[in-house]
Amino acid sequence: MPPGLSTLDFYYIRPEIVLTAGSLVVLIADVLLLRRRSGNALAWVTLAAIGATLLSLVPLANTRVEVANGLIAVDQFALFFKVVFLIAAAITVLMSTKYLEVEGVPPGEYYFLVLCATLGMMIMAGGIDLVTILVGLETMAVSFYILAGFIKPNQRSNEAAVKYFLLGAFSLGILLYGMSLMYGLSGSTNLRVMAAAFVGQESDPRLVLAVILVAAGVGFKIAAVPFHMWAPDVYEGAPTPITAFLSVGSKAASFAMLLRIFLEGMPSMNADWRLLFEALAIVTMTLGNVAALTQSNLKRMLAYSSIAHAGYLLIGVVAGTERGVSAMLIYLFVYAFMQLGAFAVLVLLRRRDVIGDELKDLSGLYVRSPFAAFAMLLFMLSLGGIPPTAGFMGKFWLFSAAIDAQYYGLAVIGVLNSAVSLYYYIRVVVFMYLKKETMGSELVLGPSLAVALGVAVVVTIVLGVYPRLLFELAEASAATLGAVR
Amino acid sequence: MITPTHYMLLSAALFIIGVIGVMVRRNIIIIFMSIELILNAVNINLVAFSREWQHAVGQVFAIFVVAVAAAEAAVGLGIILAFYRNKETVNIDEMNLMKW
Image (cartoon, rainbow over all chains, first blue to last red; front, side):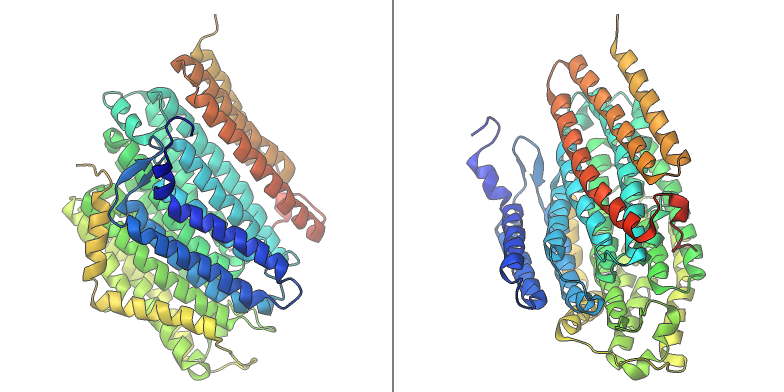
């Protein structure tokens, strides 16, 4: 054993090990099943790997340790995020089987890469060392670059991959430059050691520069305005299930990273980064919603809406309190289901002859598939924050956390923005229920897609009516992360 | 005498050149080269700080950055190649299928 590492460490990172092994099994299964039409079988293997990882998380429910001399933290905060990632990955896989079939693309490494991306996210959520965060971030990002361009003959998919790759690599450079300054000024890459070293250095201009650069780098990853320009194009061009996973998993992981870096690594700099994120939150919410108003392409509209949601989530960062963090966790959990659900409906609309991501493709969905129309109605209301859906609970907590931390202005702007966003969410509903039916080939709701939609619908309703359990879990998780007072 | 400040100035200069390159150039490959320049600015910073602190942490970090940059280059060039096969160009102004 190298120094600083013990056998016990392997026990604590068991979920990551299980997921890595699972992804390798998927890779081998792909080769073994090559001769047959193996798409669905491969999806089952992937789901089994995700299930095994979820199970291996169970014994770690109450641990709070630092693994390998403070490289990775295994605590409830990380655990909460890991559960979100794994559920999102599972729903993504369920959506993918039908989508890949319609696109006529053999799955190949697709499911392997989905698992790799999930692994990267899990490491990001646990990372309390700059090196670990970098490795996790890149495991996720590189997998997503490939996945975004997975449909090689499709020019839109190519274009999405190139744009995502260039801006992702650029943002990584900016983030790393900030990180190198953080390391230089503290002499450590461990966030908790750093936090202590930064006390009393608050006015050092180099540290302020580091805060700005890291915030900009993370801003790219969460698609906050003015670093959002890649998001609409990538979301539109990437395969729909990947867009869903990108907008949920990647965003949640980046927020986990953001919370770790700023709340654990630089709590003494909170005056600077609060100001920065307050400005980002206001601009992001407003611009995201205003731009979404004019979109006629659903994927693009959802991209702008997800930018706006990043703005709402930033309110929780600005509050910086335990309540703010717990509100963010709740919101991310809820957002995962409503966003994935909305994309699942888009996957349903994708047929051999119809791309199905324009608003007019939804016309008369109520007649063609009442269940899908109802599900979409629910997701739109939830994204808009209307009770009794889960989205309302999430927004309610987020804004009340802002009020609690005395950021009244932010709360007001958030509420006004939610009102604006209702316009484009309701427009979707109008198209589904009131517009005349357009002809096209039949909509086939396969079993896996039905499960994905069903889970999203049930969770969105149940958490809207009975959010108590989630609230308690989120509060316990937020308590394990240092909060600024 | 070369002090850590000199290294920081060099790396800051490289960083700025890289950022300007990304903003100004239109060829995808050159943009990618500019990004590599930024990553090398990071590495100079890390190694210089590592020497200043008299430990190896920064150098280890720099090796990770190099590894990550290599992985990114492999995937990135593959993506650019796939794009080139469909469009016969590597100019980002021609990436105009999706706009609002």
